Image (cartoon, helix red, strand yellow):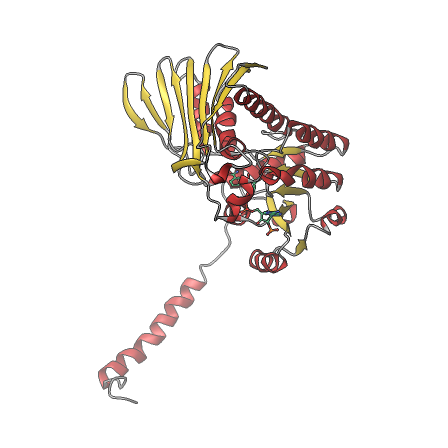
Length: 388
Ligand code: NDP
């Protein structure tokens, strides 16, 4: 025993006395341990065995960074399969998340025989959406496909037809419909808190880089489908229409990007657009691969107040502000933006279970693609108005 650990005679007596006393008290308390009834009616997540099983197709930036972590908060959905062209990455992520069923793009169709997979989430480059969605539908799976739905409206129509032919649900992953701050804005707009909607302004963009692999395919026509409008401009169109009970009747658009920029040899770098609605109001937006910093904002001008969301469509930190209406500018809380990822997959699982359309169905993706195509037609004709 070293000098430091040696106890004094007084300390030894104190310690010896304390042990029986403490043990006695613990024994007395142990006798008080007894079960209690379950109080209240806690809203529990579904047991793992009852959740719908999902295959994630494409383990890229968004799939690994947002989709997979989002399942951590899911209550009715679970990941059961990964599809990847990189087996080592799939194995690593599979081990990390307890996902046993691993596929690649060659044995993809054999998912058909796997009862552990109910839903397939397509997180591939846009040019691959239609083919992999249709094959999953034909394999008997429900499909949630990332935005934009496909490269052309003809592809969107083929995807919808495949869902019908195979009696499966088809959704487009417009996560903003599940994001708490946007849902709160929608609730307030529907409740008349800004009065009549007069005008919507939206801007979405970032700086695309030829050096960054996830941007490279976005700058290629075959894999990207189109340019900034496909990737980020679509948020402006879809989110604005989410807030309106109104139909677009005409569109016009102008390209807006540096013509000598090597990034934009195949797709447009920017487009400024306008949608005229049946009610007579205008929605105006811009979409760009040439903005710094990242822009993701929506502004709703009403007859009595305005809602400003800046940012409006990001993953984690959207901001909801009301202005006017005789009250000071006020920031409104509405829950964490992070919840949108789990809410989206659970919403889709629920729709699949109940055999009803998802909140953001394939038809919505087709509608948006037709609008984008009309905007390109306008921009190709110097901004001419295109009637819908
Ligand atoms: P990435 O380039 O980061 O990932 C795409 C993944 O697709 C790759 O990692 C690869 O997965 C797979 N893939 C298969 N074939 C190809 C190919 N020829 N070229 C490149 N990748 C290929 O893209 P993102 O994750 O950013 O985007 C994927 C999808 O998600 C797109 O549809 C995009 O629009 C959408 N997205 C949606 C967002 C949203 O907020 N809703 C945000 C960002 C993207 P593997 O290595 O596993 O085979």
